[in-house]
Length: 546
Image 1 (cartoon, one colour):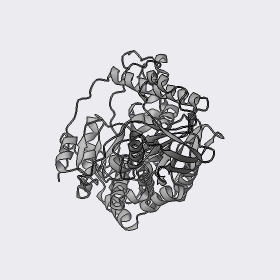
Image 2: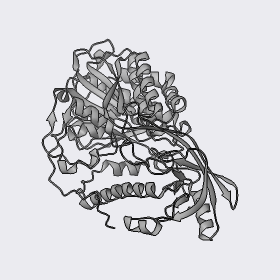
Image 3: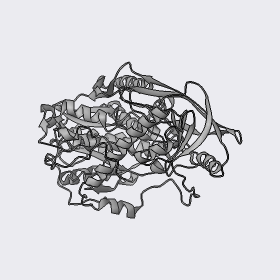
Image 4: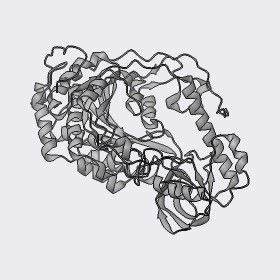
């Protein structure tokens, strides 16, 4: 399938080189096909990406920010990158985060009217039960603060079934999905961004405020535990589970809170609807960790040569949620990034620019690790004091960016964070000037399915931290596989869902893009700096309007 691009490919010229193979790397858009061949052969015949993947997912497991496993992952990635031959491998703090948390045990059993083991996992940053607790199940439906009065004084020592029922339907289509040619054509078409919705901000603020109010209410009422049904499309034993309590030490954490499989939740719900008493036992062992409030990123480098003061960056986020082992989100992206730099070191590449890999923490809580890194090294984002209570990623740009000297030295940052699927293209983030460059870089990978460039922005991951600081930041387009339907933030985010061939394809492409960016005469072109956003009215946190 031919490359889908928006303009003519620009002509090329040859750059200076720093090694025999590197001498063939040409300036501007020309691709060193000898190096591409060497990268492909090394990856497709001697790949280590799945070994890296297993070490992360199987050996270390889930990596909630500031948890003991996250600390293990930071140390292991630092030491492994050093073994690969990278230099200056270190852990870099990005600022205070808060408490660590991990669970060791989650057991939920129905005791009557039948005995049954039920599938449920605790929400992060909620407490354990301090041993098994047994209680009568009470169905609770609380949508706003106005509903508190219906239950006040009635919930103590009960186990709450929280939320609405939903219909579970048979699966009618294959869950493993790859982009069709038509879908890639659609992605290629630019979509004019919508205006930022004040109503969406108000709704987000309302939900955030209500969650805090609900936690406070439940703290006062003292139920034994709360059971919530997994969100759609979770079924068939898939549980989507994220955070519940607060990782900030001075905020309330509420009662033990577990998320249950849809089928088991439905059984309890139907029994209650038929006026049958249901008794459940919940046993959750969870611990908080307050030894170090800082979050850390893992950083390492392949030093450059004649342009060593300039930098090309790549990475993914090392942190995960706790239900699975963080394989597709985002152990896959980290394994690909690590494999990419291993390839370049194995091949003896002497890059002109310094290549820097960064594996972030705090991504799941709002891109905190990459934002902290960008703030420390590249640019400070002015803030409106009225928006200080908003999560950082929701705050508007209140004034001109305050740039630091290093900001001008970064050519680009490349990110991978959409699961295990193969790379099908790249989002240009509205940077038209890179289109002819990336178009040429993609040509050697058409046979592996990389064909699409789009001017569209894409969000939700760490390249946004760089884009917001005026640094070219890019996220690759990946096949969805079963990311949203099965693995994203779920108990099935495990090694078995990883696609070996896709990981190898992505590693070769990432290594090639990083190599090309490090070798060309010029840094990649930049968009204009982000302009300050207009003042807006921030909803009051206590607003509980429906």
